[in-house]
Length: 304
Ligand SMILES: Cc1cc2nc3c(=O)[nH]c(=O)nc-3n(C[C@H](O)[C@H](O)[C@H](O)COP(=O)(O)OP(=O)(O)OC[C@H]3O[C@@H](n4cnc5c(N)ncnc54)[C@H](O)[C@@H]3O)c2cc1C
Image 1 (cartoon, rainbow, N blue to C red):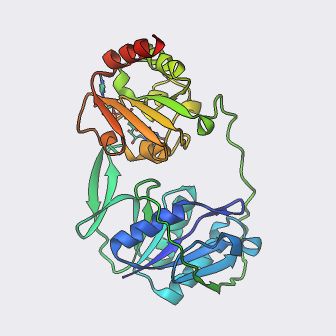
Image 2: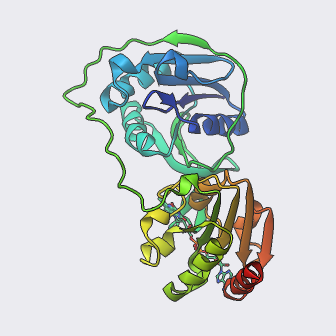
Image 3: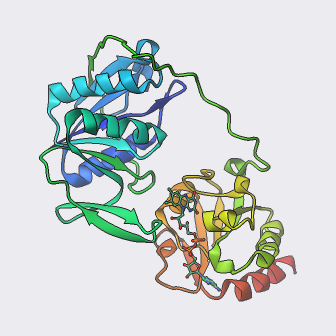
């Protein structure tokens, strides 16, 4: 089995998610080749081959040209799977590839199942298995679902030149995100509130613990969607990616989209009344308790 990994490159750098795609391909037992539209400095560490097209001529992102480059690599390798990250780049490029090749696509993969792939459903509350029926398929993989590989090899590089016919599509650049009230990415301690805190009136209880240990308040998406906490404090794939020394998850189940934003934390403490909550799989300490009983008692003890 062979997998073609489509690397992602932004503002002159290879994105780390490329190494998550490598782990995914390794778990499939696939031989790996990669394609990068970037530059020589951004070529990923790996054994095997990397097809390289220059971002200087192809554009850092231009869906029409990037599709041509990836199709050229597919023609040379005839891979079983064409694998991209489930990022805005992957969302845009993957269906273009699947349509051009007239093959199926499996999106937002979070696991490998018997004969297929696990993808989230019901707002990521459940998982279902999807098996492509054809011999070739395009796959997009959820960020954070697979750990990063750490290969040390230096690949052989084969250059791809495509006619940069943009068919009128131009890349205008990136828009800076809204100014954040707080930069959680720099915080050393974060205490995050999840839906398990029950109601908006309980947010100050979590904020008080954050203050007591010199940290910042974070939140899961439902808490932000409900308007209990500003979006600038959301942790996860559609919020901020954080890497504090200490992350305290209060009433957070540990959905993959949340874990993707905080899995690089050095030490994770989770408070959850469910001893089997998935957050327990990444927590260094899981406190099985009612968060609204435990947190005020902990804050009180710390303040003393
Ligand atoms: C495209 C997409 C993007 C997403 N992006 C993000 C994102 O960026 N960030 C994010 O967080 N989510 C994101 N989500 C949502 C994600 O899938 C989960 O739905 C969300 O993370 C769940 O939040 P939660 O853990 O707070 O709530 P729940 O999953 O409802 O978990 C609540 C937890 O609290 C526990 N609990 C309940 N009562 C108590 C109590 N009294 N004491 C202690 N524990 C209690 C429960 O046991 C449960 O484990 C995204 C989803 C999609 C589809």
